[in-house]
Amino acid sequence: MTLIDTHSHIYLSEFDVDRLDMMERAHKADLSKILMPAIDSATHEAMLLLEEKDPDCLAMMGLHPCSVKENYKDELKIARDHFDKRTFNAVGEIGLDLYWDKTFIEQQYAAFHEQLEWALHFDIPVSIHSRNATDECIQVVSAHQKGKLKGVFHCFSGNNEQAQQIIDLGLYLGIGGVVTFKNSGLDRVMETISLENIVLETDAPYLAPVPFRGKRNEPSYLKYVVEKLSEIKGVSAGEIAVITTANAEKLFAL
Image (cartoon, rainbow, N blue to C red; front, side, top):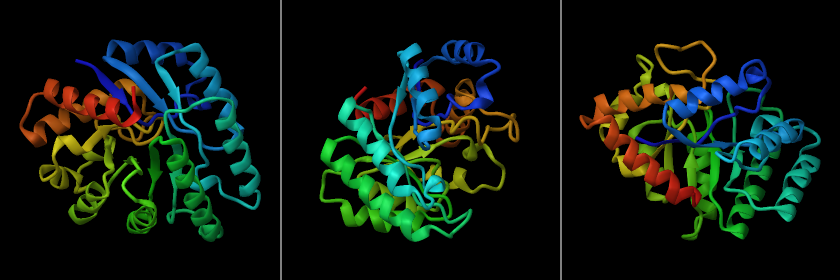
């Protein structure tokens, strides 16, 4: 069985004390690749250094909506300049966040639009952050989708209608620990969604699945997401792994 974690911030300081052990646990848990979305320039160095050390860890590049502040144009330039030096597997993590501070929502929209155009220009997928903003992100993506935009709504936790809209746009749903949370409702949504439309993720160090909810998440915990999906869909964990890994390989050209 081979798994791909399509969204993991394992370069952050939460892993500084045991990163090597954490990576060993990931490999023992059948993780073949871990995709690392960027946040902002403060953590680019750590992310790129980890990628250099471990060929199974692959960096994305982009500006996280929660990092869109007064200097967002400078941050966008820093991120964009990286694309002139090398290739990346995706533009990410980008999007909108209406959960936290809404002071810079106009700037969030501007950054999102611009980075979607990067993805189209370089013909690579996007990893979309849409916390409390799923409908808004769907609307923005729709405006850019001329048949070539590809990507994933990371940490999808929306309803059936939103899931179908995303699938109709040609994008995947990123499914992680939330599907194991009691009362999240995501398990019921997943009952109606084909495995062909999802990829797996942890969003480590955040959103650890049950039985580790509230603790630090890590890639090896992806197996609990697989087990839950196996239970929901009534198929083996091996089948979940085969289909979602193939989806991730196709989306990110792995």
